[in-house]
Image 1 (cartoon, one colour):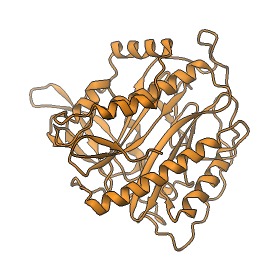
Image 2: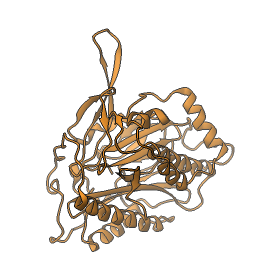
Image 3: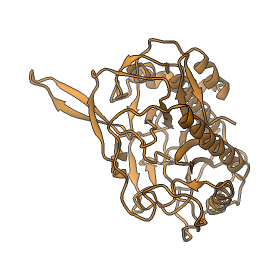
Length: 370
């Protein structure tokens, strides 16, 4: 979940010569994590339709009953936003972690990874997302940490659970998982003043081949992003190199989905191993032709506007998250009246992955890795 992290949003402006240009908004976490929230359009598929006889018919996602927030022991330190409805001010300066800060970041991210790994074992037909929330909550507080989503901008639960067409920020409730569902579980923990943030999309029961391919492609994107990270690059901090997904790129994605390429998280690790000194931030966007999910500035984060040509550097000791969201259909979304749950307008499935990364002198290191 992008708690106290950046939410990117491209906005059109007109330059003095009359040409339009895109500007990208971003915000830095207080501790600091830069979150790249992206969405790539792959192919159009109406809910319940068949893809080569392999996509199961399914009912649209419906909300269940949301139980009251779970209590947190008084001895566990809270993030500063807890108990309020506001989102904290965003630091405008790039903040680097010293050795002690990196130790704390590692601890928070390691815990988040373990919690996510455990949460994945709970994904089974008939299990409710509320039950997953309770289990995640208990594991986090038993470790002496605070579940970061709880109370962030009024979010009522301790984890985000986004099922099927839910793109992100799904609120756990009484709905039971169904055979064939896919679910993203987004875990963020607050430990010793630092947030560890990670998410993964899991398969529930017998999932059709199209859904499996969607999840694999989403993992590929995360690996592609990470392969461009490095220390000391002259770059922009705005990653919206392309506002709209070029048609040729959509075709490539469609081909990948159709072919069912055996892409796994191993690709992500291989991508990191190719990191080299000298690549710019903007090449993250140019590498995979981002479409930025612009609807999520509604989180209330203060933002710092930066033009696409502004120089910037990834610096040793900097941490941020990469969070690609891949839709099988429309890139447009509808927001439920809870103010959090974002679902694809056409009901198409969406998959999401996230890691927290540390920039080192020689490359990038995944901190949220079990």
